[in-house]
Length: 475
Image 1 (tube, one colour):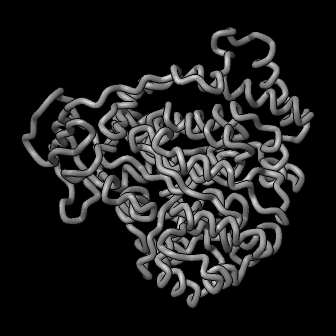
Image 2 (image 1 turned 180 degrees about the horizontal axis):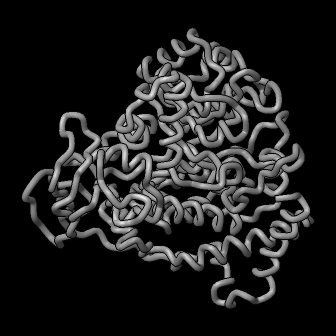
Image 3 (image 1 turned 30 degrees about the horizontal axis):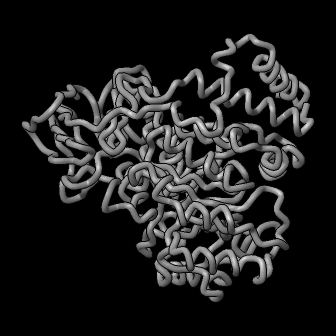
C-alpha cells in the first residue's frame, strides 16, 4: 500500500470511530477504575471425554479417546474412562495445554501493523512517539485487546512486557486489563517511552505494586516482574543509570527481564558484558539474544538465565535468526513470544512456533532438524520452564492447574487429522480453537469468548487510538 493510501486508510478508520458510525454504547471506553466490565466464570467440575489428548508430558504421551477431569481449577486425572461433573464431549477434538507466551509488549497492540516501510515510520520511532501520548485508559484498551486475542487464539499465559509505565496508574491499567480478561500472566513493570537513557526510571510504580501485590494478583493468576533497559539501547547506558534499577529489582525479590544482543551482527559482546557485570542469574530472562558466541552460551548456561525468542518480529525487523538449537543443546530454558503486534500484525502464537521450527530447519538445511512436537513443547512445557511456572502449567498432569485448550479440526484449513502434532503446529488458526480453559474457568467455548465483549474491546481500542492520533497530531 502506498504511503498516501496508507495514511488515508488509517485516517478514515479513525474517522469512523469518531463520527458515530459505531453506536455510542459500543464507542464508550471503560472507565479507568471500572471493575464491573467482566465477571469471570466460576471454577467448576467437568470432564472432557473421547478426545485426542496431547499431555506434552514425555512420560505420559498422548491418549486416543482420552479424558481430562478438572475440579476447582485443578487437573484431577488424565487417561481413559474418566467422569466427574459436567461432561464435555471432545469427540474429534485435540486437547492440549494452553500456550505459554513469554514476552509481549501488549501495551502497544493498539498500534497493530503501524510500523511502516520507511525509517521514520519504523517500529521504534512509532512506539516512542505514540507511546508518550498514552493515558492509563489507552494502556487498558490496548492490553485488553491483546488479552482477548491471546485467549481467542489459545494462549493461557502471557508475559505483559510493559515498557511504557508513565505512572503507577499506567501500570495498574495494564494489570486491570489482564485481570478482567481472566488470563494467567506476568506484568513486568518497565520505564516510560521517551525517558532519556541518561536517567534512571522512577521506582515508585514498581515499589507500589510490590508492596500491594496481593490486591492486584487476581487470586494468584497474576505475578509481578521488572522490565529493565539493561546496559544497551540505542547505545551504551552508564552504570549509574541501570545499576539502581537492577539493584531495586533484586531488593524487591522480583524476576527481571531485559532485551540484550538483539541484532545478530550489530549487538555483539552484550551478553558477555552483562555476565561480567553480574547482571545475570536464575531470576533473569534475556530477550532475543541473537548475537551470542559459543562462550556466551556457556555464560548463559552457567548463570541459569532463561531466554525468550520471537522469530516473527526478529525476522520482520531484520535482526537475524534465533539460535534455538544451540540454546537447547546447552539446556538453556527457552520460550517463544509474540513480542509486538505493532511490528508483526498477527498475534497467533501457533504461527510463531511454526516459524521457529522452520527457521531451525532452514538454517540446518534439514527437513528433520526440529520436530513438530519439539516446537509445540517450546510453546507449552518449555515456555513454562522459561517463566519458572512449570510446576503449575505447561502440560496436562494431575495436580497442575487446569490451563488447557480444545482444538476442533472441523474447518477447511484443518479438515482431516493425520499426524496430530504436525497438524496442530502447521494448521491451527484462532478459529480452530474451540475451547480455552484458564485455571479451571472456561473463557472460550464453542469458538466464542464468554467473558469478553469482543465488540466493546474492538471499539474501545479504536477510540483510544483515535485520541492518541489526535494528541500526537499524526494525520
